[in-house]
Picture (tube, rainbow, N blue to C red):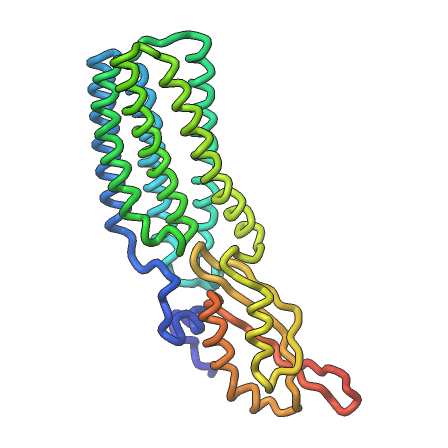
Length: 312
């Protein structure tokens, strides 16, 4: 009777060499703190907004509520990506983080469109703004969103899912900063159009930062080569082993927002498969340093006629 594979069999390459410097190990505290801070801020904005009849604050409360939703979604995707592989999902649910980053990018585009739409409306219909109240609440918003964004800062370049959460919070901190500045200017000058002008500048800044997230998310969702992978360098690193004559059919794709996989055909210089067995772990070790966490290599030798033969 065949021996049943060990639990976690599908993850046998992961962490084989103990290198985890490219992976995000635990960001749960950042998610929880961010969710709690932003929820409290939304509640405060709703209360103050109703008491002062400030449409601006109530609108911002709705906008900040999307942050809470985004953080909940990101945390859920991150937790889902850690779940074990199954017979139906042999990689587990790692790709949930990629799908979530795509959702986050689209949400940010809607937020940007909302800011621009509101700005255009305000250009047509001048709105009286309570400079002091709006500035005080927005100042609190800088701290809430700034602290939350800072919690994700160190991991933002390691994981596109974390980058999405970071950009959401940073964009809100920028919006809050713009509101503080416009509130102060309006208080002293009564130039209500300043609010609209600053909102346009902020919207453009959010759009620029979101565009990279959107294009990266689409690329990963379509199994494109991740941005942190240099395919030429990957090929050169495999060919740097003198036992390897040729490498082709290289495919690299993202398993999750922070793990990548590779499949490739390698042709050996001699016909000795035992040669490859000796260097196999070294090749995978080298690839791990190039952000390839799972590698599958198909070995081929050259027969007497010089014709490449596939080895099982």
